Amino acid sequence: MNDNAEQLVYLARGEQALVARTGDVLEGTYRVLAITQGQIEFEYIPTGVKQTLTLPARDN
Image (cartoon, helix red, strand yellow):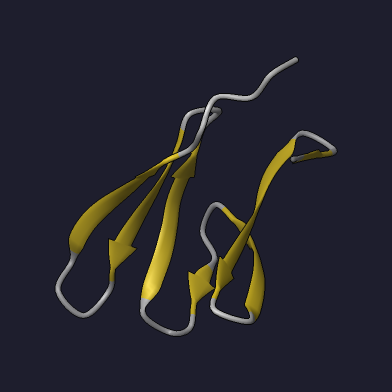
């Protein structure tokens, strides 16, 4: 989702729903590094390991 030129993503973990923006820290352990049309890049803060979540293609 694009909110006034800012990319937002809605994430779910079990019953919990989160709204994330670039730079946000989620649950005190993951930092959102980048959001693009095709993926979200996270950093696992305790170890500094970067992880990528690929987003499914959207039908227009």
